[in-house]
Image (cartoon, rainbow, N blue to C red; front, side):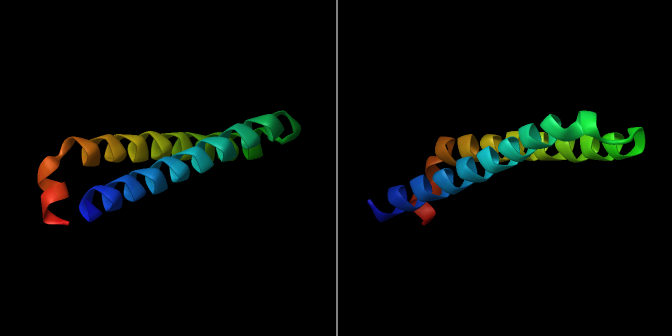
Length: 74
């Protein structure tokens, strides 16, 4: 049961991190209109990275849950 709990805790950390990235991206979108064109382009690049990272973390979380071998090795 400890292995299952460890996996669930890892998944929770991944999802929390994904949510933080996503929230940061949305917060940045709110201020883009106040920036110069060059600054806005930089912020949009950062937003894209944050959203991509959030999606990657969610995929990793799903992969962890789908691998019973991982659970056995913990």
